[in-house]
Length: 45
Image (cartoon, rainbow, N blue to C red; front, side, top):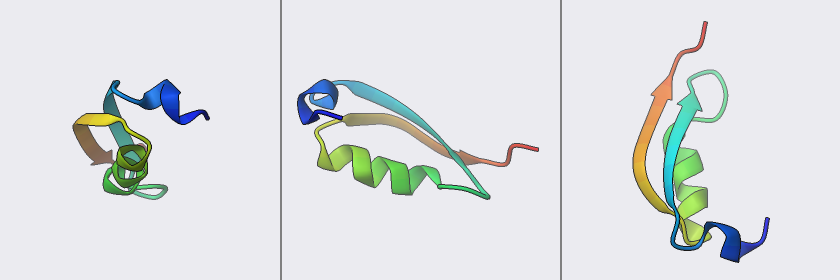
């Protein structure tokens, strides 16, 4: 995706315990300019 798409946007993240955890997604989103307002890692069964 184009960096300008996420720049300045507020982002909520739901990670998966058996997949990609929320903090890992948040770290990626912060590098492209997104503002993380909520991060969680859940178990979807």
